[in-house]
Length: 380
Image (cartoon, rainbow, N blue to C red; front, side, top):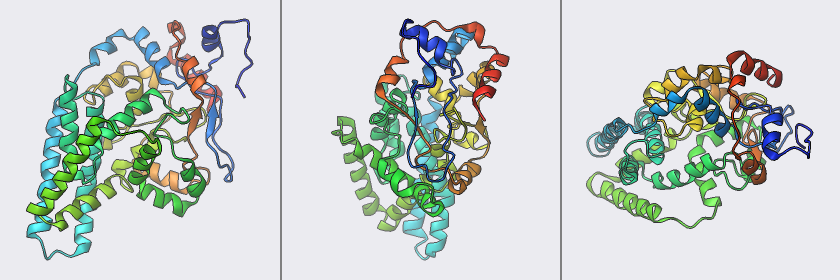
């Protein structure tokens, strides 16, 4: 059911401007699940928030366009991280051969998991062509940091993450949405949610496979490259080295603060808001990956300049609820009786498309007091 009655005599563009209570801040009138037995996604009849907010911000702050571009430093960071992890794998597999398995697991979590989570951030930047101007060099950057990750993910992530941006929350089209089986079997059980978070990397892969799309050329190249690398690691290091790298990836994409942004970004923590940022010290190491509202609004801005967007357009972002602790995100998600894979907002493709029609942004409505008043009227 639509949140507001629609006057059929008005044009679709007029309806979007008049009836969408979330423009330009895009906060909805929909509510979070309030009962523990709620076992479905939250549904909305409007399009995703970010295109509207981008237009509103550019209308008021056209200087934001100067932040667009590339950041080659990302490739340098990725190269250093790759070298460190391969060095650790060599030491564990070829030098510290008498080390107890419990110590290896600890190293795999605290060092390997931390670095593996960073690989995902570099792959993310490369997926948006934010490292170099030429797409080829961005793809090669993704392959470089994928080298110590055992499984081929960089080119598939690039493909499906861009689809997530294009179809955020659209049922059947957004590969970031949990599968029906996740909602059905995990729901809000704390133990199952903890296991689900621990294995989140596998869930991410399963969602891509569930789309049943034939692999593209670069995905095949990625697979062949990683299989060859894995063979070389076993040949010139040891199977123990490969196991260390695999466990590191398992931790880095699971129960690790560096992976908490997967939950932070779109799982619902407040009524009417479907995307969340994180403003905490973790952004220093993880290349500002927590600024997710800002990133979805402007995926053309690299991590070294995304905080400048936050400072320029502060009146657009201050009213939004944001997280300050990735540990807190994981704890709240696991312990909350109404949180689970089902705590996501979904929309139909028709609603998504209808909301993306061109319209003039009323800049006079984008002052901070107006946005905050609008937010307070729809968010509990």
